[in-house]
Length: 87
Image (cartoon, rainbow, N blue to C red):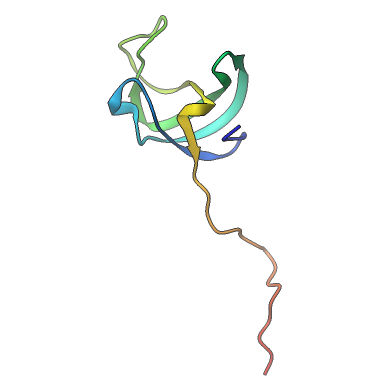
């Protein structure tokens, strides 16, 4: 799996080219199909639905395959400073 709940990710390899490069928040896993895990996501930039009952609509939440998501990672953040400079 590429993602887990709570991750921020960017969309890649989408059928609708306008849906590539959208930053999304991964909310929960909605299941598995032959293409792999499917995540429920939300995002600020509307994405065009290309299949199903809402085809042709612009939405800010929905389901997406794990293979179409790349997690955005950053530098690990620690609440406590582990390395100190002594004088």
